[in-house]
Amino acid sequence: MSGVVPKIRLSGVCKAFGDKVVLDGIDLDVPARTSLVVIGGSGSGKSVLLKCILGLIEPDAGKIEIDGRDVLRMPREEQTRARAGIGMLFQNGALFDSLPVWENVAFGLLAQGKIARREARERAGEFLEQVGLAASVGDLSPAELSGGMQKRVALARAIAARPDILFFDEPTTGLDPIMGAVIDGLVVDCVKRLGSTAVAITHDMASARRIGDQAAMIHKGKIVWSGPAGRLMDSGNAMVDQFTHGRREGPIQMELRR
Image (cartoon, rainbow, N blue to C red; front, top):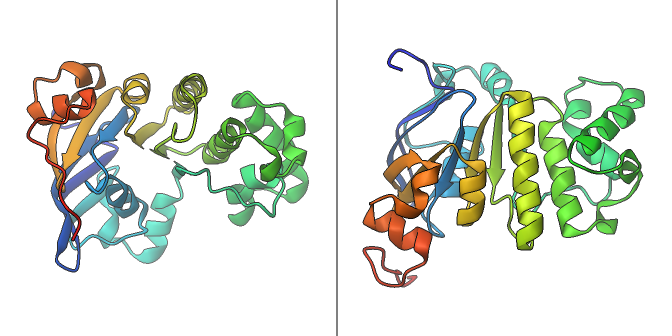
């Protein structure tokens, strides 16, 4: 596999907020058409890592490459174009309450001028059907939907622009185990249908094994293990084993907040 350019490559990525170091030299490759899950405790740096790739936070040091090009050193217009190929499923769905469901789904397409409003309603219906919802759901408001339905709508919005890269922030948070499994199945189906590269951050080990081809664990701002997602429960790494099995005793100790 040497010589193959990964879809996403992070090299020496660092980020601190004041004297708190959140990312401490992250090196991570995500091959094209691969799903990577990133696990780690609260405050370990998972969300900051995603936000750095998305351009919502600028790292203090390091390189973030997409298709072999360092997005941090591109002109701003090129950065915007490179990141326009990223779809995002936010932890809480982040739907716009004031807009009907169909307009939420088509929001990115409309904002980028990729589609006329008269076409957007029909296209939104197609994407809703891909995540197991009737096209008629598009006429409802987000407040009329259950948590599982809201998550499906958010997934439909994430895939609407047919992105090369998909990010998932805790995709099963707030869902019961059955609906969590349903959402994971939809995530996998959508990623495969699009041929996308996916990165998910999660605390849910069942979800991680369903979504991921590969997995990595972040602890205190460093990648402490990476390997096949199927090995998460028997990785042979003491930190990963403690985390995935939920053990109180082990190398990871809860720190007092100061």
